[in-house]
Image (tube, rainbow, N blue to C red; front, side, top):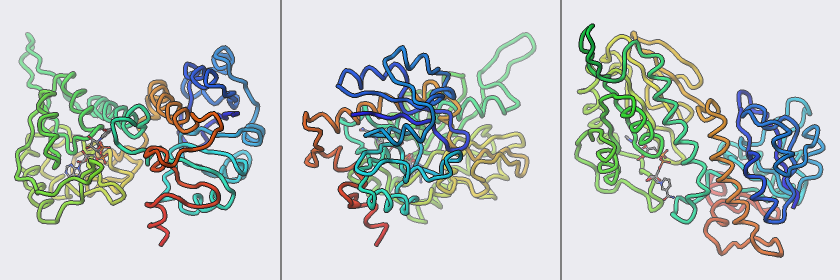
Length: 381
Ligand code: NAD
């Protein structure tokens, strides 16, 4: 297949779907790799790097989309600013597109892909099973976000993170609170610990307690509800009663907290509010909240997605797309994920997809003119 890698056109996106070092993983599997000129520039990869890796450089997205059999992307299909056409109309009929699709918030795009007989796969829908870990882009990119969130907080906080014993006095470590200890939260804990902070964390999934403690952080003890997890390992939406108790447990710590990193999310739902405006007022002036759930509505009531605001003396960062601020490694990890998925999907010699396979079945959104994904079908009912 001719695998096309376009330049991402979403504003401030710096990542690229396939980095030069992953080109050979595709060419060795018998594919050609065509890369739009400049596609890697935001991640510091030049056209020459791609050519040396065995890819062919194509000038302009129009020609790339017109000849590729499969398009590998990072961001959801969107209006192409130069070509003045939607990327869903640029993808050739009867071909394949793979990337983060944000299918539930782009239902019209998904309908268009089905109408145009495009087979599409959403990286968001890769099942969280052991066999699919090497394809799990939600995890790889959440790792980047968790790491970067802590660095942003450290850079903005007017204090040190580590304990310092100096001739100019002893400085206590910063107190960091991490709410939601999934992939991003655990990486935030690890990064804050490496910088020397004192870290506390909470997550309603019982398995997380041990993971938090193994990173040297303190788990906030609370009575957990019985039925917390879905079969897929995601947290279920919690009752108002539980959230109120959780807010109380968090509030009890805020007067001593310097940095709060929030990552709590519920698959397909608005993120839970864990920090109300009254709770923001309990933080010390100069405290920082980095809200990684900003795009899902935010874990803090005062978060504004994509903005940094100061409220009641507290800086609240509505963090969006932090992986794009670490483009080299974010692209490298994403590239590994999407290449592994592509090779998995098209491993049959006749190029046929195997819908008996859980990964193929779960990640597929449209195929042969139909919307095949259950989540999307339900959203359209
Ligand atoms: P996510 O981004 O959907 O949510 C982040 C965290 O928020 C989760 O840990 C969740 O439990 C937590 N959360 C939800 N409600 C909360 C609340 N009220 N207060 C505090 N925290 C709350 O999750 P994720 O990081 O993508 O991971 C989700 C699950 O998938 C985890 O169980 C993880 O271990 C699992 N996972 C499995 C694999 C695999 O086996 N292949 C790979 C990655 C993740």
